[in-house]
Length: 317
Image 1 (tube, rainbow, N blue to C red):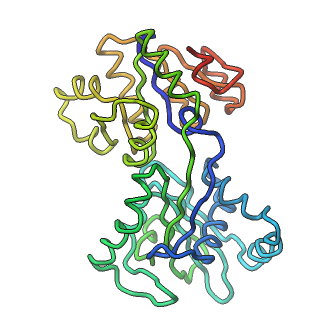
Image 2: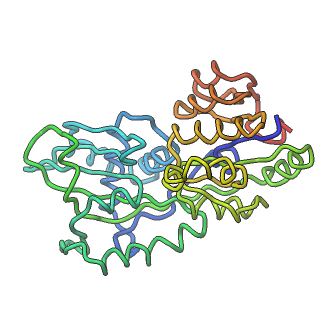
């Protein structure tokens, strides 16, 4: 192969992501945000990920087990709409005392787009342009530092079941910020692959600022980036050249990863794709060489041409 496409999390960064901050809309620590995020991660049955694992680990902390046990007992799950790559958030409906509460957790842009109000110190205020500006004031610096940031919102519900049309009119409660440090071995491995004339492309669902921050630390060229939305807007005649020149692709859906691979193949490249999860399956099948690891999901291993016994780019090199 002469081009290797990799996701960022777990390949260029460590396996274990940690939840660093759980905050209200102005960046102050908020137990309510952690509690509702915990319920969302616990009850949604879509594909679990490293971010959910990081949230759920809080129940193992000394002195916190009883708190989270009580939280679960007080909030029974009623319904859910699992995460998908169009909405980019997961919805969970729980019973909360006398009322039902719909909790959504996911992409900053997609969650904020569905919010009509913000909550601060128990007060609910309209989501004005000033409130939207304060979102960026709080989260932009964290994104530039390479942290993943999710938004959390909720709204009361009278019904005990959900439909897509009800995912509007939320109150933004705050944010969850995660950190996954770049792997020490990744920069050296990328350098060796480039010496072997194998170009590395990063294809991630993460926010562009996060992807750029991590890739810059690993010595990857971040001058040319494309988001999934920008990719979809590209005229057909421009796509081959733009994809050829781009190193970092961010905010992608599984479908868009496949489109990038096919464009690179049409440009004359032999393309490898490194994947380990269910959502990597379409891209692994589209690649000339599907690469996985022995700790990956079974379906990913079954569709791979190469299975590495250690999750390290140096092994592949």
